[in-house]
Image (cartoon, rainbow, N blue to C red; front, top):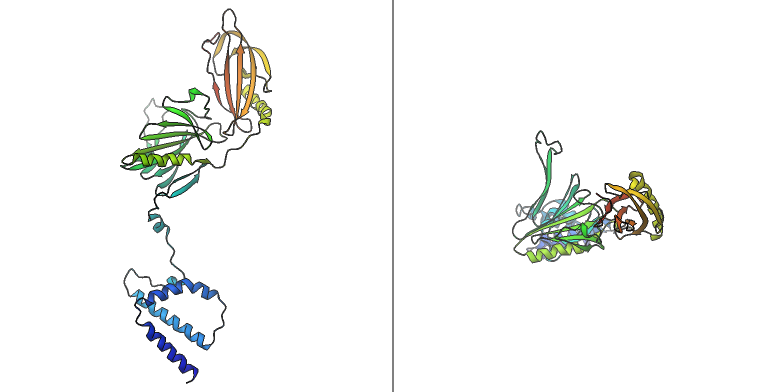
Length: 383
């Protein structure tokens, strides 16, 4: 028997052996899909018998593809299926429920944290002058919108638009709104040493290593966070929860906040640079307000003067002799805190006392938020 006859018999025997297997076409298609690219990249020299075997496999593949194409509308029957496995689409991947307890990572708008992978997220970016709605996360829905309004004849300070964030929280759902604030009603750095910086329901906490404020109203949770290196802005995190399952959802929100890190991280300031920064900050403050003139530019030094006005207060009824001191320190938020103190002695018409003014300085010495007081109970010659 010549080689061609032996090859023909072998091919027929192989075909007969293959016919009883009902899943042959699936195995052939899957096998070619997996090894097809490796076969194309290999540099193999094929003889006559090898070429015949390859043609036989190709013929079987064509038969298998034909069988699959006739199996119904749910079958795949294109040459692309043979070239590589069909990738899973993003829509398919996102529709699959996340394993219980799995987390996703958020890193945007200067904040990085982990949150339940089953939550949905959406980006807003709506700027409402002093407040910018950044993002929504949760199992409900959130939308920031603006509605046109018609101001009345005397409403010259009212905008023609009314903007706000709307959270939709159904039973067993939770929503978190992220925003930033750079103006009234309160802005600037959070100082845990300032009792006047809290609302009655608030308390100072630490988030991501920086000072923050927390308010718990039961169904709503609110955090006000520092913004590293920023003398005006704050982050706001507002969460709404509706039962059943309040305890679990509250724990998820609290875990989100506990995982917060700032991105980029807070800059570390060099305390030895304090005198230079104090000189820059005081020079700019004095240029805008002469009531700062008595304070020395060198931290730790003292100066005396007779003043007619305290910083951030109206004029006194008569001159007051004071001693002025300057102090500066870097704080964890990545800013400088400059403390200016005026003190006076007792006299026949006044008690001894002092007044402290705090100026927050950016890393380069630019003055920002200025806090006056607390005022003494008996400020002389005022109001």
